[in-house]
Image (cartoon, rainbow, N blue to C red; front, side, top):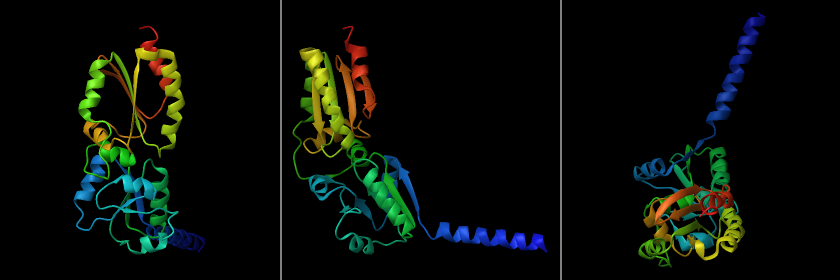
Length: 237
């Protein structure tokens, strides 16, 4: 009798657990190629840019709508979505898109996908995008700078990227130490999106690349220990 009661209790708990799990949708991070492939297969596209309106106005994935958890019309925007169809979300990094995807999954959206690396990965991977400005720096000018200097350090990021802001004082320290020996280029998404797209090498912000005689010495996806890595290469030169 006790075994039967125990078995029934376990069955009930498993049923309740299943209901709790399947009443919520699933959320997953996807790399660019997988994210792009899924988007291309959608008849009706639901893609959300979870950045701020100022960021969205400068550049975004074509077809995207713009809102996040802090938007005044959030409930209205969510109500306009079809919860039974996949939803695709991106921002700069994972924070805003992650919060939004978690909320949508809790609301029962069947599939929610986040673009790993956000808008940096999309534009940096050469995918089509909208921009309301012409790039300040062209790829031809970029290559000319590399060809004209023995050492070039490239900082690629966005003024809206929190981690990118921490790079600036480090760059100033490196600039003070090495002077004319090292050319430093700072490329921001808000000023030169097309050259970022043309490079087809950016996956996240910040991306830092050190060139020696027009060849890449290192490429860093993220800040890491930038000062030390530059010192290792240049201190003995």
